[in-house]
Amino acid sequence: MSENSFANDSVREFLMKLGSGAPTPGGGAAASLSSAMGASLLMMVANHTIGKAKYAEYEELNKRVRDEAEILLERFISGMDKDAEAFKAVSGAFGMPRAFSDIQVDRVSAVIEELRSAGCEVSDIDAEEGMTPELMDQIESGLKAVRSAEIGKASIAAAEAPLAVMEDSAKGLALAVEMPGCSNANLLSDVLVATHCFSSGLLSAYYNVEANLPAIRRRDAELAEELLDKAGSLIIRGQELAEEVMRKAGK
Image (cartoon, rainbow, N blue to C red; front, side, top):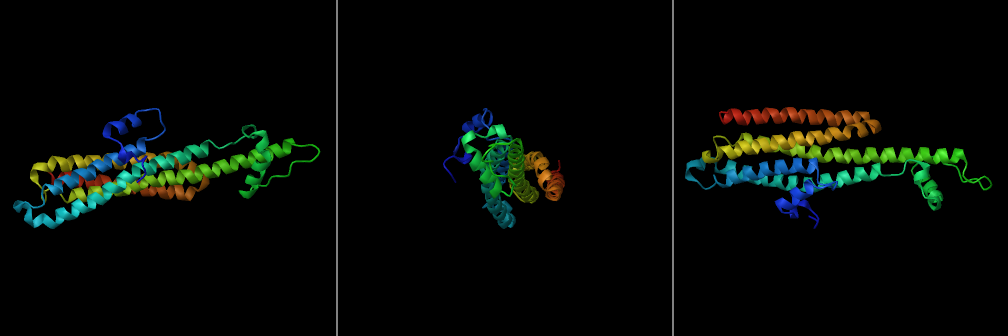
């Protein structure tokens, strides 16, 4: 964990960063935090059940839920930083030059070599005429192509980060299903709160997956649909699990 990890912030520090004009943290980190609270609540309920004679027959179940929830908690904490890193990459890609006028004069030759390395066809600067309109068009076309490719590439990572949060949130909901009737009855409300935290984290993460799909679709339409289908399935699964928790809790 780096020194700049959001996990090192106090609650107030993180919330102030979230409300500031800084690009990160944002909605993706908030989604991870929501599900992290769900995992922590399940750990708390399990810890207040383990060792109590009244729930002896559920001792191993609660130990397993506690341990698995702790693993999820660490993933959610890591997910907050991963979302920020992915967003920075997307922002960097959008900030790449896309017009000939965006290039400094003394960088033109270097840019031509960079574009060629990226597979773009760009002519040499004419020894007599210098920069011709045709060459400027080639360079601009290359800049746009490279920028678009980088946006697509960065957007894939930016969609995969919240998708992982969705997957882990669904796992958290599956753990919550096991708790009603098998854990400290005095803390049933905490299981229900955990369920809503996971559900909120899952749906919030979905919006962040969805936001990156247009850029991915321009690069790889099949992959975009695959990600959308996977995210959609997780939403449905999450709803089913949350409803099961409520049913078992008599709500």
